[in-house]
Figure 1 (tube, one colour):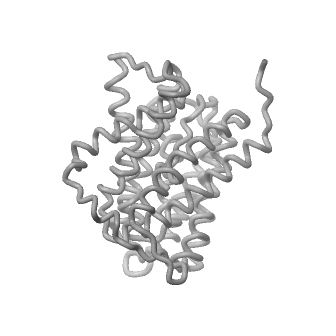
Figure 2: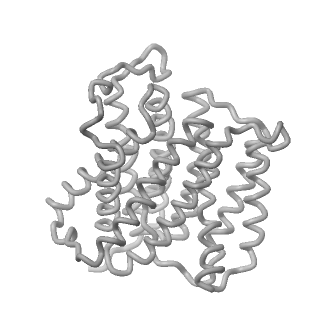
Figure 3: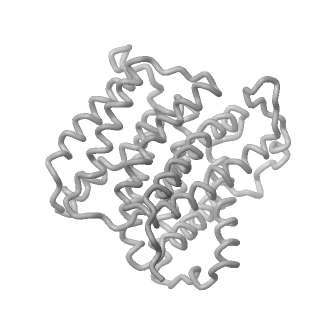
Length: 321
């Protein structure tokens, strides 16, 4: 029996995923401030998510885990660039500047995608792409407040966020190709596995002092403290697995472009959460710039004349977030 699309439910799932990813940005900031390195936090998140997704699929649908030898190089690049490096660069960025601003930079990925399909794939794009590019660049100028001695933001943080945007764009472009031969759930699962393997080599887990996970971390809610391990569990479960499944569920009820447009509220949510929880206050110029960039992102999302295949639902998020 065909599944009946329920757009309202799709929007609810997408908003919930964006909200959870937004909260995860603040939780990740707390973990980074506690002294855990971006490489280690990324490795823990990727490995934890890989184990969880493998376990779920092994029980619920083991046949979806089959992989051909010819697919391995693609999955390796997909997981390393699209997942491992996107998340690592995002963590570097939020360790050096406010979460909401880091996300504004990272979410310019649709602009890079539209430029790539026009310049490299020779796809037709709508004229709104140029407006989107102009708005995004102008907005980033305001966000960075470049008139303040060259910019009020940390240069390394800005560079990391922009590189994260390029990696995220690569993730979506490769995801379009991969989704043509594999279902999104299994493809995303194997992308996390590839990322976990990469970090096992780049930052071997057996060299990690697990005792630090027992250290108490103030979470800025009165005098409440939690073990660092609790924050890591949150980052794995509520920062990756849960919003991933919400995004998957949303795509059953919404077109990918609609889901992508709704997901642009994540920087707004992230800024509000960081303001309430970490007291990360943005200037008026940065708020204005963020609004301008998000407008450009919305236009870029709809600039492609040929509808794209269903994108994979991990943002970062969001991967980045």
